Amino acid sequence: MGKRLRKKKKKKSKKKNRKKKQNQNENKNCFNSEIQNPKRNSVVEDKKEDLISRLPDEILFCIISLLPTKSAAQTRSLSTRWRNLWSKALMLHGRTEQILQVITGFLDDFEELDLLKQFRWLQYQFSQNGTLLARIQDQKELHLDFHENQETPKNFDWHLKLHSIKQSNFSLSAIKVLCLTSVSSLTKETVSSLISRFSFLESLEIVECKGLKSLRIEAGSKLRSLTVLDCPQLDEVYVFSYNLQNFQFRGWLPWFWIKYVPYLEDAMLDFSEGPAHYPFSCENLLTLLLAVANVKILTLSGWLLEVPVPRWLPTAGVILGRGDFVLNNLKELWWIDSSMEKHKIEALGCFLKLCPYLEKLFITIDPTSYCYPSKEQSRFWIEYSRKVASNTRLFHLRMVKMEGFTNPEDEKLLGEYLLEKVVSTEPIMITAPKGDGWSKNCTQQLVKIAHTKHQQKTH
Image 1 (cartoon, rainbow, N blue to C red):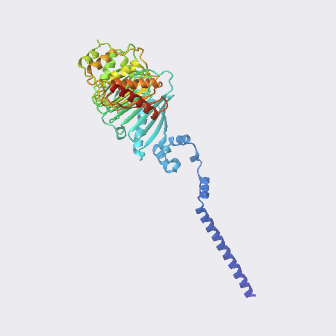
Image 2 (cartoon, rainbow, N blue to C red):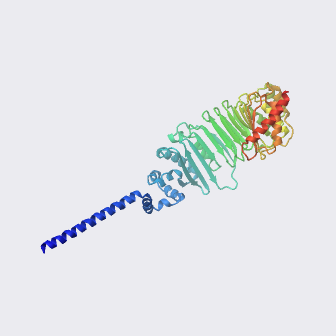
Image 3 (spheres, rainbow, N blue to C red):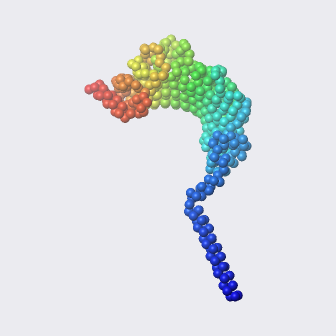
């Protein structure tokens, strides 16, 4: 009996060992299958994913905005979902008087915490209806966009003194480019105080400031670029910036004073809205043209050369007497007009004769642009161009681009005029029909027409 019992016990133990081995093998197989099946793993991970990370960005922005700045920056280590959220938006609330403090802190935090130094956003709500959207990028470019719900904005004058505070903290001195949008009478003083602290500011852009009537900028020697666009109430501009190299203006033609800009190379005078003052001041116009006489690139509204200039004006007498208003440095001319009728073509031709070294000519037709009422050409510019133009034809003009022409006959008329009376060598002429982009077929057709006309003249 004892032997039989021992044999039975051995058989039971063997069976138990076999079952253990089977269970171990099954566990190994399950583990291997999980490793070999990433989809199954992702399903398991999805089940474990936290619900907060699934919320929309707008809600996560609100959550981050409630945290201290350093804590908000630390959320980037939570997961890939949170990595860039903290730097995209930061929402704050306060008063108008605190804007300067908020922007300074915003720049300081960017310098301290954003190791990549790429970009960051800030949304600041002030007063009842005011919002400021601030954006910094590339460590040196700051955009400030103001929004205020005002049905009729108050008119205001704005006097900016740049670089007036020589000592500033590192984050402020790092800003080289400043873009301002929709500054109003409510925010101008705060913005002025902020600008004075950017001791190394090189570029300033002012856009869509409703209510701005007078703009006076004193920039010393550090400002290189100034842009003023689409300020509908602006009727007076004064600029003093000794080292200014680039000046862009678009809007109504105001009273302009640009004082001594010997290094100005690129100027845009887009007065497509027309004159801001009636009666029109020809004296101020001539003074403005003299200020940009040494530029290399010029954008100009064609109607300025259609205005009749009285000979008795002091500046007109000086120009006629000295004969030194010639754009010897000009290489590129961008001409904007409402159409290209015969008297407009002749006005362009007179101006081209004052540009002896012009290489590229761009002509844009914009039917919405201001059209001077008179259909007669200004006798002043005819007489002056005949008097001072040493070369009746342009020897260096190599390319002409025409854009926005709706009538092929106007293109043909302009091409023939340029070949007959302006250029000495046949340039490459390119046309772009309105809304169609540059067209090779139109280019070839116009060159063929111009080339045939030129051959007829030479034989």
